[in-house]
Image 1 (tube, rainbow, N blue to C red):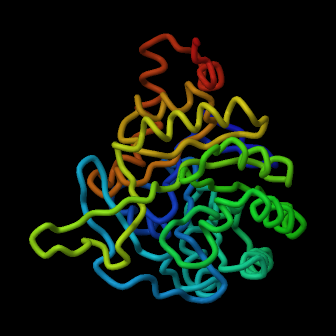
Image 2: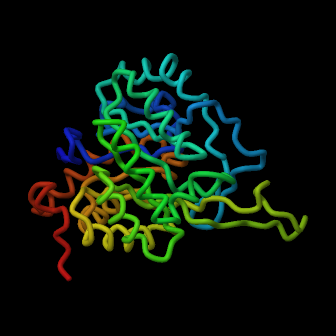
Length: 301
């Protein structure tokens, strides 16, 4: 079940917890040993603390949920001094999701984290739809995407993963730009922009009106985008979007993903991350599918 994402990042299995849905990992230690995961992707970390958006900022919907948390986090200094040591107590790859409001913001947080031990790579968040500046602006502008990834590549030899937005016309274009700029892998998709309203109060259910839509309902869209991107780039692709079973995860890998991230499912099934890799291995064995590497990208079209 090992999978190689490049630049020395070899995971014991292909299952990660998606950024923003698992805090900094400790929330799940009551449900399973974190060592059952291939990697933990932390909540987004910026150089300075961010309070996030006003409430209400999360609402359940048909087939998923909307959130507008706004990248609330304690900042890079508190992460390194208080949270990273807790993660280091577990034998698990640590990928830090990083975020900034500008090129310098992204650069500063990566430069700071370079001085910390126990970080295996970065996931560059250029696709969060729940902030007014940064994030999604980079993920919907190819020139900004390429410039940022190129600048970050100069600042680290650690694994550099870039998380892409589905809220674009051609996501493959952004994946190609990331590869050319020096990214080691691509993760996709982040949330779709959506909204929910209350017809009784005639008000939005989210304070910022719109939010990021995730959950089982977006899986067909995410699966299609992973398939498209995996055909266009040579670097590894990580699939995200609506995964709630071993079969879901294997679908993403069948169309070309080398690893997957589980997000919304952890809210209603907090133990899923701890059992998913075993269930995937069991399915492959029972169905005579061979090794994980044999399975990846073996879709018959």
